Length: 79
Image (cartoon, rainbow, N blue to C red):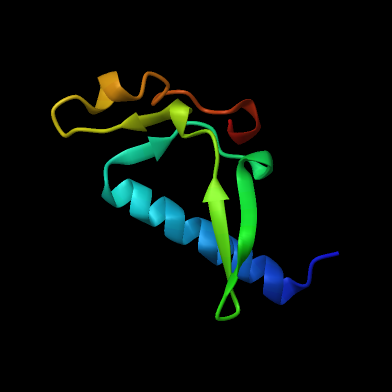
């Protein structure tokens, strides 16, 4: 299994990537474990790559609803 410390490191790396993408106006429509690749470590930090960016949307202030057609969708388990 994966230690708690390593799980936190991987989660932190994923959140950093998402933070960077969001700062660029990019929103991932579908993110799950199969799309997260561990590509190595640098200075004890996990390096990741996220696959499937072809399903990402670029958000502009002028047309946020058009850029994300599923913006109003809520997964059944969250209802």
